[in-house]
Length: 326
Image 1 (cartoon, helix red, strand yellow):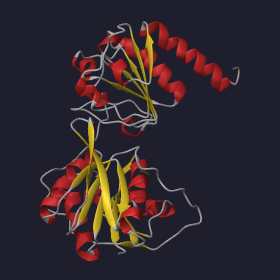
Image 2: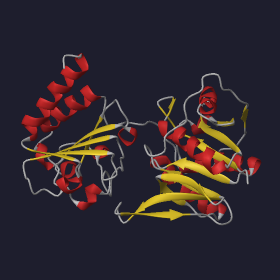
Image 3: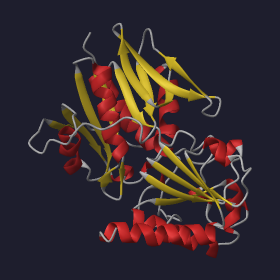
Image 4: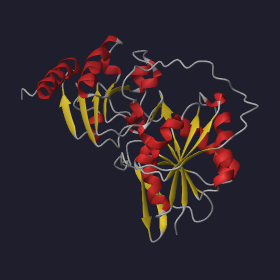
């Protein structure tokens, strides 16, 4: 039966994050030939609504207010509830991002709805929408369905392929007014500690360092390799705890969960907490001096050696490949 599915578009730096397009693709499956409505909340986000339509949304809705220029739980909840009251959708999809993980449970509680979090796949089986999500720190997967009531889920980045962008596609974009008031939090300024460049959560290539990098300076070869490959730099909790890098780079059970096409682990032993954040990467390469390191158990390719010798060699070889000399 066709459904109306609302997808929250998420922005960063004035641009839509890729997970927004992935959520639209999931929404097309969940809608079962019904309607996918892209929702944008913020200040001056109207121009981005057509981009959601080019990636598959049937129409767009924007809620704009000066109090929504930065994300706050109270402000976005009020804005999204105003859209929900008007649209009465059959389902809602968010990205499983910091914003999505904060906002979705609050809305689910208000709506008395179940929430399927961190879905890595969506399919239709016998007329039912089925979500697949990891459990037990990624050691197993479960299939979850919502039999009745609102379909509500968050989508893990880099798992559901977005639809092909159609430049000629367009649709209706409308505005919803919301009274944003009684905010308990006011964001005056956002200071980003992470380095500029590729978003770690959505990166297709991640170069991660552990305690084996030995120092802050030890991350420099990893940054150079990431720059050559167009990837992002991450870290294990051990490296963050040792103050080799900022916690914004932490990957693992208590950090970010990443699923890149290529994950290169440098000087990372492979503790279970770290594996929970990266073990679903499509290709894993491990570089470690210890041939018995646990990271090799999950790696597709292993290099036993000193990362300070191996990583610069890889960087030079990739430079040659990109220059067309190989």
